[in-house]
Image 1 (cartoon, rainbow, N blue to C red):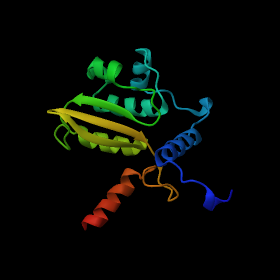
Image 2: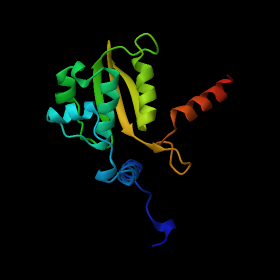
Image 3: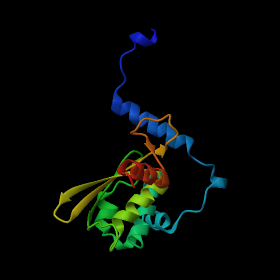
Length: 164
């Protein structure tokens, strides 16, 4: 069967396959890995298994909240699936801001540093849903739903488009 006769791929399944393959490519041999950060270690010591995405999310949230122990245990242990490789959802009773109480800025900067897409949704009054998904650095070969620019590249694009 040639290419023109093949049925179109399921977009969702294709996205998951592409992301899983790219995450696999980014794995580093144990001897070259940096030691776990304190937030990931704390989460694992409390009995949670973490995917590579889970480790990145734990690092981001641990930094934002000065340690994961400042996040309610039902959020960390009962509602968050740290072992998911494609999407981790965290619902917090918290506000997000850009400067005085700069958790929103920290979330954006750290997600770009960790190459993780974050979607922020309102869940209920004062509750925010954070949806974390893995991405790869933008090399010009990946689809929009797969890639993530560096913070610096994204700021430059925004400033260029804004006219600053």
